[in-house]
Image (cartoon, rainbow, N blue to C red):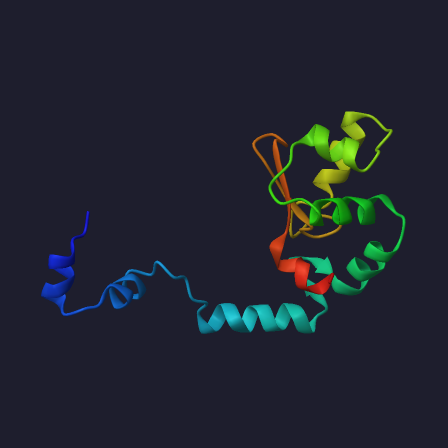
Length: 132
């Protein structure tokens, strides 16, 4: 544990200490440039922004999945997600749909993340600003 005494020895305020220790993550110039390039190419995390906006307005399954995840305040599990979008197909088919949207290099790009064997599913925070 770091005490105020050590901070005083360094001549730092607590805010300076936190910044010095990278508690607040800041983007490097390269990360900012990479993000700008991705946005210029019309994609964020592999997601085509024009398609994303089309999916949200349409009635396709991927649009229903995105809209449902947007309404969630915390990660959800597989069953809640499947029931929430009224998916009538098999679990295997639904997992296939999840897999198509969970990675940057997947068919749809990274629309959501799936962790702990589909027990924690949530929207990709990087795409939210392109939806609303």
